[in-house]
Length: 84
Image (spheres, rainbow, N blue to C red):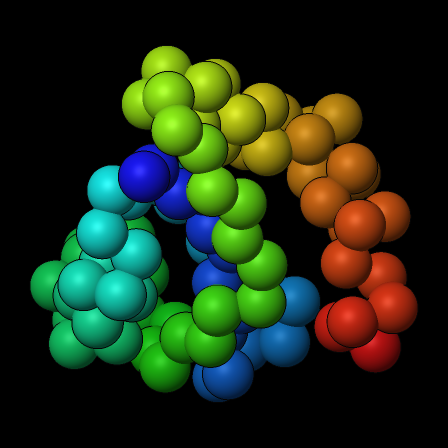
C-alpha cells in the first residue's frame, strides 16, 4: 500500500506538509524526530489527512497534485470542516 499524507505543524498555524510514503507510520515518526530537513523547523507534526493507493504511480501523482496551487485549494475544501 502507498500513502499520500498531509501533516499539520503544531508549532506554526497553517503550516502543512504534503508527502508520499509506502510506510506511513515510519515516515511520520521520521518527520517528528527531525530526520526530514524540510519539516524540522516546524516540529511537532500531526497527521490530518491521508489517502491509500494500491499503485505507487497513482500515489505519486496525487502527491504532486496536492503540491500545486490547485491541489492545495482542493485539500482545503476537503479538510475545511475537520481542521476548523
